Amino acid sequence: MADRHATCAIGVMAKAPQPGLAKTRLCPPLAPAQAAALSAAFLRDITENIALAAQSAPIAGCIAYAPSGAEACFDGHLASGTARVLADGSPPMPPDVQGFGRSLLHAAQAMFAMGFAAVCLVNADSPTLPTAILVAAARALLAPGERVVLGPAEDGGYYLLGMQRPHTHLFADITWSTDHVAAATRARATALGLEVVTLPTWYDVDDAASLARLIDEVHEVAPVGGLVPYAAPATTGLLDRIKPAEYPRRAAQ
Image (cartoon, rainbow, N blue to C red; front, side, top):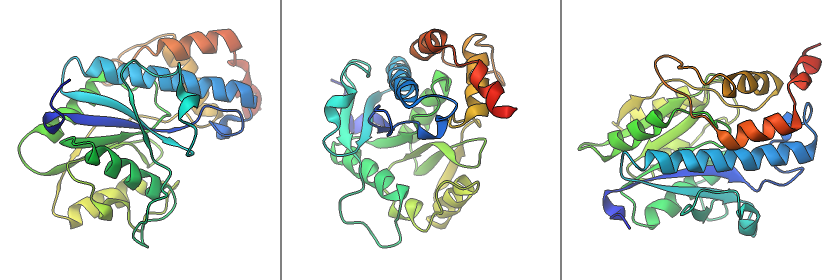
């Protein structure tokens, strides 16, 4: 096993892929069972993508999961060697860290406690994220100097946040699920005196329009801004089986 003190952990913020719990914002256009299956496919692809990135940089893959007791729900849905850490936000937290920030901070603290030199938190909504972006994030965090790495999402949030220490202030007083989460996080990092390395913007799959975009993307896998999207074979195979392409169009009518 690689030396954790010279390795970047990349942890996927993951809900158990169960109907009614996972990808609920995609219901409709998907049925709850379809959404849960899509969540499982995303987890497979994202963790396999992390494993592929680990061939080019010192990276260890993890999932930071919730709820407590759901660990077995991920069996068969993860790349080999993916570690599991609970990230339900249950430990005591500063009063200004609320909502999803509690789970994010819990995940960062748990992975740093495992001895890793750096930690990236990534979402479970971007199965085609280019592998090169994960490699770039890890290399930036493992280089000399102190910094934060931010992967902004098109909706104003972020798909990746990387750090070299579990800075509580990065998660404090953030209004989650809004279009200024990335900007607020950047401001927190700046207030801490940290350099912010900004990655290329990517998108989340969390509504009918982004699902339609994903369907188009996985069948073309064309470079986007010079970056090659990850092929996401598990997601592609599932979408071909459930054939949801018509649903986003119906939702838009």
